[in-house]
Image 1 (cartoon, rainbow, N blue to C red):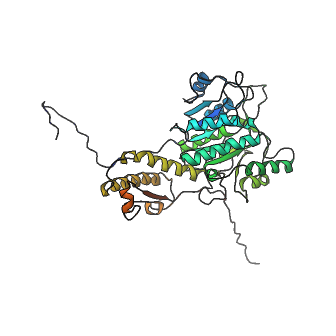
Image 2 (tube, rainbow, N blue to C red; image 1 turned 180 degrees about the vertical axis):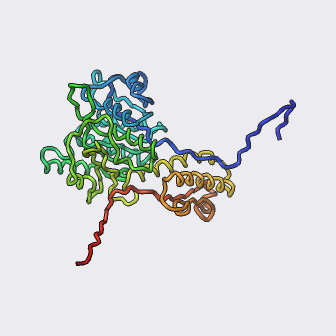
Image 3 (cartoon, helix red, strand yellow; image 1 turned 90 degrees about the vertical axis):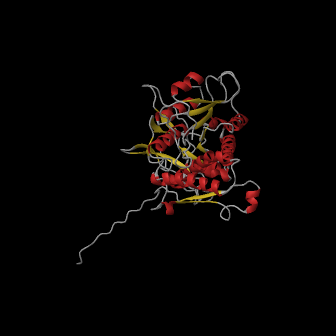
Length: 396
């Protein structure tokens, strides 16, 4: 009871339940690339909220670079906040190297905001060096476990090209250079895009990652991270560097050897230019095959991890376990009601376990370890839809 000294009316706020868990932002990209201007001071990630913010801090387009065009496509397709790391000004500094990009990824470890990673200018390194940067980014995401990579194919004609046989060889070479646990934390989209330009100016093809990141942000905001970022229109684009048919996409969408799927961007009459794939690079993995599944688990795991910070140095006893279980249950129930999980009832959609004899032993408690286990029934995209038509024919 407060010790009030003056007569009057006083209001006390009394908590009626455990703390709540809020979902982290799921579509804040970290762009790494070449800019016209590099901000003074040590190299670091700068947050921008619009194209105007970006141009004020980093200037306009750079000859031979794709970062500015990618930022334009990001914002026009629904992107919001983003982080940008300037590798340097091409007019005054040497071209970026693999080491430049790995240094940026190292700096990214200190940033808590970004949940996506893009580096459209890395295509200028050539296929082999590009693969080294992409592998480093995938390994970064697998280590941090709170980010996802949007990768680009090496060149504008890398998917099909003028000669089908040579293009297939290029695709196989591209796939063979990427491996490891990080494959589930990244996706590749292609071909390159032809952005809208001024009248009389021929569009120059640019990598697709910036526009795809904008679509990720748009879909997350409108539907949720559990909706596959596919069958979505690309704004600010007038064409593609090459046409992909159903037959072409068969070899891109499914890689029977390594599962390294490439998500096609295609033009459909009457519909426009659409992202027509929703797979991670772990295309043969039953659990992490789809972008929406992997990113949903990233969101849930990181949201719970951040919310559990208060537990550190709390007594490792039944009261703390009960609080943690209530918090996680309440959070997952909200996701279930929002349509993020499969199952007709919460019991079929998720479970949460924490406690002695369930997730911990007496030795764990003595060593200060508190283990939480939870499981989700994720919704998966209806990637292949089959229609069966039966005709009832009158007997002769």
